[in-house]
Picture 1 (cartoon, rainbow, N blue to C red):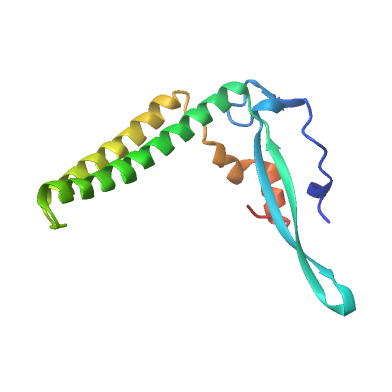
Picture 2: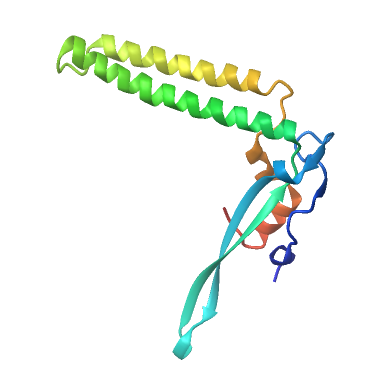
Length: 158
């Protein structure tokens, strides 16, 4: 058994923020990471039953880093909406409206490429301006936060 199963609830005093390393972390701003694992148990009549267990590990985070992570998530979401919704959908609609059923006409394809390029530029610039201090993204904790690394070694997964 791993010590992760007996992890206490999130303490009020979490120490320093894992992301910036300088500000005090708060329990309300912690980045929750839910992990699961399969557990084989002996069932009735000698058969095996498989169940799953869940645990949530809170990565300590300060309110400022939590706000930056929320802005980054909005920038990513909006750039995907721009890319797929406006770019590809608008390009196809433009083709149908202007050129009938000629899906290979360059007008709609050009529109889709321009909006797609614009959404990628927005993603790069938006990420840069939403995160001026260049703190690591929230998902970086999966590769660097020691309790999460230990849990992944112990057989837990996302």
